[in-house]
Image (cartoon, one colour):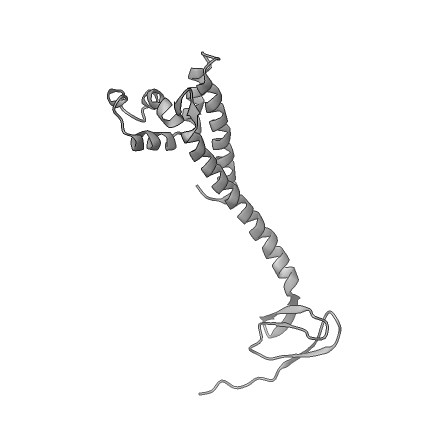
Length: 171
């Protein structure tokens, strides 16, 4: 059976006060006369109009903030990957820290000399801020070590990433 056709609702345009008719299937429209775009709201038999620009502005601000945070998280993750491969005292950091991974229990001391590249990279990626803090403490005994400065820079990136992920609501 066909759905009965309801008469169009008659309203005045909030922008230019001219009459308009809104059919039952209309959800959004733009006025030819004043150029305003509206979203039609229907609730409890009442029809109201909201300028689309208001809705877009609110959604856009929230969405823009979320996109900005997501971009910052992505950039920080890339920066940390770059740090993993940064040369510290003649070798990539993830390799230089092999004894530190063992010290932290990330790899077995027995295998420190023969552990493969992927395992070293995985150990680097598994470092937590607390792990890096422990290593900074360890390297603070030798202020001339480039590794201590490197770890402080890495810790700053990790802390910023953690904060941005929390703001974004991701882990």
